[in-house]
Each structure stands twice: as C-alpha cells, then as structure tokens.
Image 1 (cartoon, rainbow, N blue to C red):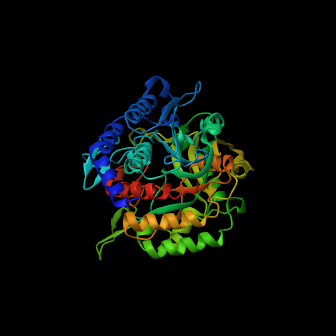
Image 2 (cartoon, helix red, strand yellow):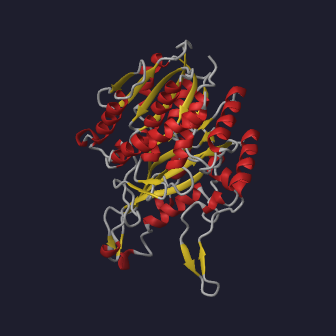
Image 3 (tube, rainbow, N blue to C red):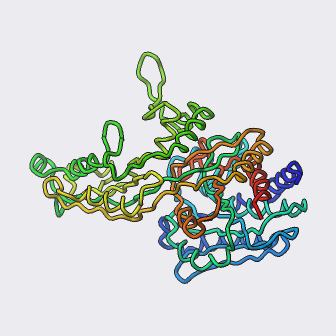
Length: 480
C-alpha cells in the first residue's frame, strides 16, 4: 500500500466531495431526541440518514450493501457491509461506528457563525455536528474507497451509524441485538466519535468516563410568597439545594466526596497520562476559552483552572469524577424577578464518573445521597435521566500498537499518542460486551477549541484528512 497515494485520493475526496456534503449536513437541525421531542414529525434525523444513504449508494464500492434500519418508534440507523478484498476471508470484520444526531444550538456563537450556518474559515468548518460526528460515515466509506482504488488488500468492513448518541444511545441496544449476527467476528472497532489532544498526530482514546444525569428538585412552598414577609422564616429552596450539592462535592475545590464515585487509576493509564502531559503541556488547560478580567494594576488576567499541572489536568478530566450543574428551572428571568421567595429550585445535574465505576450503582448512590434527611424537611427528589458506565479499553494487541504508530508517523509525521477522554459513549460498553475479543481504535477530530456541544464548534480540515489516511493504513493491518 502506498500511503502517499491514499492520502492524495482522500485529500481530493475531502476537497471535492466530502466538505460540500458536510456543509449541507451542518444546515440541518438534526437534534438528538433528548433535545427534540418532535423529532419524528420534524424529520431532521430521517433527512440526514437519507442524505448519507444517497451519497453512499452513489459510491462505486464493489459489493457495498447499504440499508436504513428503522425499528418502530426508534431513531433510524444506517448499516453498511463491504466484503473483503483480494481473497481475504469475510468472517473477521472491521466495524466502523459513528452518529448523525446533534447537540442543541447553545448560545454564544460569535458574529457570523451559528449552529446551522456552515462557514469555512482558516482551515476549519464551523457549525454544529460536522466533527461530532457527521464526518464519520463519509470518512469511513471514503477510507474503503481509497484502499480499493489502489488495490490494497483489506478485511470485510461493516458500519453502524446511529441517530441517538447525543441522548445516551437509548435505541442502540435494540439495533445491536438485531444486527449483531451480521457483524461477523469483529476484530477491530473503529469508532470515529472521540477527541484528540492536538491536531499534530494520531490520538487513540484509551478510556471514556461514565455519566449520571438527572434533575434535582427542592420544594419548600406550594407557591411563591413575598420575600419581605417570609424570608428569615421560610428557608430558601436555593439554599437547601446548595446544601445538598455540598454533599456531593467540596464547594471550595470541586472534589467529589463519596468513595462510591471514585476508582483506582490503572498504572498503564497513569503512564499514558504522563506521556500525554509531556506532549501537551499547558495546552491541557489553555485550550479552553477562559474569561478575561481586570484586577487594576497589572492589567488583564483570566480565570484559572483547578490545576495547571498537565498530568493532573488529564487525570482530572478522564479518571476522576466531577459534578456540573448544566441547567436550572424555577428561576424567573432577571427582568421579571420580583421580591418573591420562590417555592422550588430545580437543577439539571451531570456527574461524570471514572471509566470503571458502574453507572447504575452510581445513580442509586447519588439518589440516596441527595434525598436522605433533607434540610428543613423540604421535599427533595432526584430523577435520573440515565446512568451510563464508562469504558476502559482492553489491553492493546501488539499488531494494533505497531499499526497505530506506523500510521501516525506516515500520515502526521509524528508518533501516535494515547489518552483518556472525559466524555461518554455508551456504544463502547455495549459493543465491548457483544464482542469481547475485539480491539478498539477509538479516535476523532475533537481537539483544542473545537468546542463540541458548545458555541463555535468546528471540524479541523487538515486533521480529518490526515486521520482518514491513518485509519486507512491501520485497516490494512488487521489480522486475517
């Protein structure tokens, strides 16, 4: 295989075909079902699947079988199956994974940008979803096409592209159960929905955190009352909620307190974090859009992270739990906030878990912690939306370690790097249980400042081209 020719093929494909395709994809508000209760009526998820299917069907890939799979009442999936080439057997397979659903709009896009407004600027495609994870199906099939165009031998390749990943993949178990017999003996899972520490080399994800999500509601009164009349006698629901949250983490440091939410960090992951810290340095924390502030003499400063140690920063976002409040209800807008003691406070909570903590057990532990012995006998409820376990990659096979490093050096001219990610992809655990002998190539293009889920999200164009070439090189190395 001549990787230079593969790269040329893929570069042309990205410039001439894939980027225009993703520009159209960004325009579609294909929000995940958790953020669009009317997704079936609106039809956006169906449209992006149909668009991907139409593009894929037009590709000249020998033996390609393509199908939209849609179980009643569930979000649709795209499934593809391409036989092995050059006489390699079809039993062992490479399974490509991606998704086409998106996060909601989010405020704060800079002038000239927007979630459904694609803009190519400075080597980046801005807009919601191109990097997370609309590019995956197009990259996967282009990798196969590039290998076949050069006549390179490759194993059978199958793909599953879902449309509810951003909602926690609630429909995926049913599709895995339905389609698993058609996957074959999965030798390698190529998941293209992860991040990268930088855009300069191939990054492989070694672990993903779990997640407990839900709503905490504190009720003190049946209705709002005059704050001048009641405050001092009636406890504030906000203060009660604050006390409850203090049971979960230290308000001064953010450290999650209960042992139930912690796990021992494996020695291999510590070593990988140290190596990644050496590569990334201060970029570990400087990648985020810190707010600037003036402190008089000395001029501008910015808000500070919990740690400036690169290794500690990597571990904090990959192997340690962390609590975030991601939404609130029961608060009037500022312009209509009268002198009223509010009857209730509701917070949307997101508790990230270490990869090896059981998500369901953590959910129950969090519910007990928040609801037990409420201050002032307030009515406290924690309603869990989901409890997803994280994922810790199995031991890397020697062939994959060699293939990854060779591919990174060939495509990026730098060695590969291995790092955990702080997000949650429920698919990984599901597939790991279905195919316990599989190796995992979990990678992606969500690097510094790409801001998945937030404003100004972008796809780094040069990185996705190189990543596509690297994945092509690795696919050819899968043992028959």
